Image 1 (cartoon, rainbow, N blue to C red):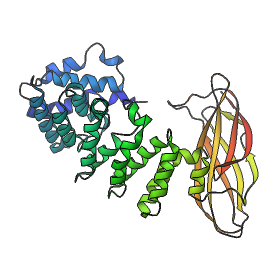
Image 2: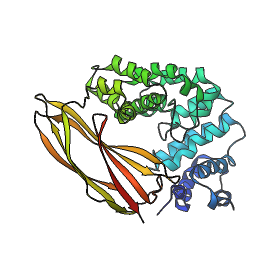
Image 3: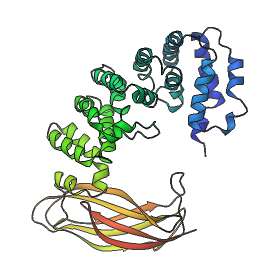
Length: 366
């Protein structure tokens, strides 16, 4: 199995070296490769290799930051012209260069990010700037909401997410996200689905600490457009999985008049590497069409013997009066890097419109 850190391979470095040679005077590929493959390189993980690549590039850059950034812009254009890895994770050493060497030159760095993020996202690189210059960065992000390139508009939203995965923490936005909302409001009708999805992810981050603020936003934006309604639904996914009563009510999701029958855990013992199979019948017992959101929760056993709940969505759609369906699902227990499985008793729970309905038990073993 290949590892993410292996994106930084010899093929990658040889590939970009031609473009660096074109744009940075005095660049020497042999010396660059020697610097890259230092004794510590093999033990570096992805982000460490990203930083290391930027540092090795810096070895050949001019001493003046403004001159370095000018050449970095030329390098981006050369990479584009040669078709190299646009929007690929390994290219994030470019914004990382700005993060490492530009924190004391706000204007030059923001102009550089506006260019570089059109090639590869600067969402991580902008976080230290957001911590040091919060008012200036948020004002610049507000300007970016009107930028003609979708990558710049996306950075306006993605860069200020309160809980950006892998991103440096910005405590003030997590504690009080009010300053983010004008940016998100300006982008809620964005023509790019990628930008609207970023807005939804930002709002979902906000919901984890300020659910009422998301509810207020959902209420204000409801019915604005089909796209905005879809955005809000995606933004509410964490609260929906948590069964938040007011969010469920906002979407008209009620469990009354919906029944679950014939629930059966078909694999009472699951081998690690195999799959849990279960089935149940869901019926709309009312005389009106009803939206039914079907989910299930797996209560995974942890190393300390406690159970940890994880919710998975099956479907959400309208069921006609008296409509009944038999649902069968498999839940994988194949080994993955993000979850470790432990032997012992686990639990399975069926959820209808946010309400737990019935539980079963199964055993996981090697």
